[in-house]
Structures are given as C-alpha cells and as structure tokens.
Length: 278
Image (tube, rainbow, N blue to C red; front, top):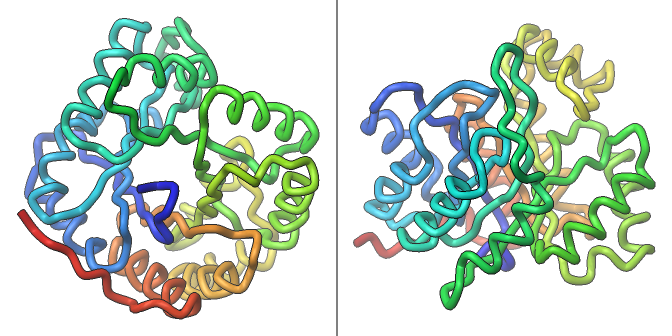
C-alpha cells in the first residue's frame, strides 16, 4: 500500500492510554489520507506503543504504517515489534535509527539500516513494504545519496523525507537522486509539517537535518503556519519528482487533512477517500 498511496499523515501518540484521543485524530485524517503513520516514541518521549493504535485505525477502515526505532530496543525486541506489526495487519514499516535523547541511553544493538535489512527476514511469508527516512537537506548530499543506495539494497521501497520548506533544494536533491538511478524503485513521500507559531519554528530550526529558510520561518512566526502548509502541499503536487505527500500535523490534524485534500485535488483526484469500515 505505501508503494501506491498518494497521501499519508502521522500522528503523535499520547503518553497516556488515551484511546479516544487517538481515535479522534485518526478520524480527522481518515477521509483525506490513505495511510496513517504511527510514530514510535516521537521526539524522544515515551508514548503509547504504535502497535496499540493499529486496532483503533482498523476500526475506522484506515490503513497503517508503523515507525520502528532501533534506538530503544535490542534485536529481540525489534523483531518482536516487526512481527507484531505484521500480525496486526499493518501495511508497512518505516525502519529508522531514532534521534539521540539527552539523559537516555541508546540501546545501539542495530542501526536503522541493519534493522531495515533484518525486517525482511523477520516478516517470513507475510512481507509488507519497508520504508526508510531520507534527508534532502543534508549538509553532505553525496553521503546522503550513498546512504540511500544502501537502504535500497536493504529492501526499502518507500521513503519519508524530513520536513520540507526549501522546495528548490528539495528539487535539486531529487534530481541528483534520479540521475543516480535511485528513484526508479522508490516512492518518495515528501513531508510537510504544520508549524503554529515561533516556538515550533525555533524548535524545527534546531533539529538535525531540518532546513527552514527565513521566508517561511517569518511566515510561521506571523501566525501563517497553517496557510504555509497548504501552499507547500499545492506546490509539491505540481512537482513531477514528488510521488506522494506526507503530513506531520504536530497536533493540528484538521489543517493536515486540508493540505492532503489540496494535494489530491491538484493531482486531479477526489478530495475525499471512500472507505469500507469494518
């Protein structure tokens, strides 16, 4: 399913067993994205297991993709997580390393790339697509392209980019990746974040690999983050190198749903996705 989807959106799971809150977030997105992506201890905070959210999404007829972070588990726990995700009927897993967290020891048993390769074996006879993360804004693009080649060799068929605010830099990187023959078998989901105010903009600027130029930064600080997300979605829809849109609502699922709708319409598709629930 990730190899065909046009829109996806992730939700940050709560730190408490707040199932109603998770269901509400999924429902807000459900009509406009094909996939809901369930993050794994997002922002380095302990949160509800993404496995627990799969059933909540299935109740609404929504397909899911799970993040699995190598940061927090040894290989036994990682294998258990991947097998559990497949058993519950998820439609894909994104294997990632996970950002360092101050004061929390990284397990370090496997890298994200090693996890990506091993996950294919762990799925046995019920394989689902495996995804990776991609940073078009890396300080060393050549190194990022080499890493992407390794991820492809390990079985990645789709990728989520870092939040994208510099679309020219994004286009230049994707052109280089295409020229290197790296996009023929990879579906690229370009990520758009919904940033509401200066605090979120400042936080984004401090994250490794996130490029937030002055113009969008100032627009967000003036209170225009929601409008910026819609503008970016429409612009990305016009870029032939962009396969799909991935939304990072950061708590604003309503704006993310509008951005997904705008992207779909700009691609000539219905804004609303018909689903069979149950």
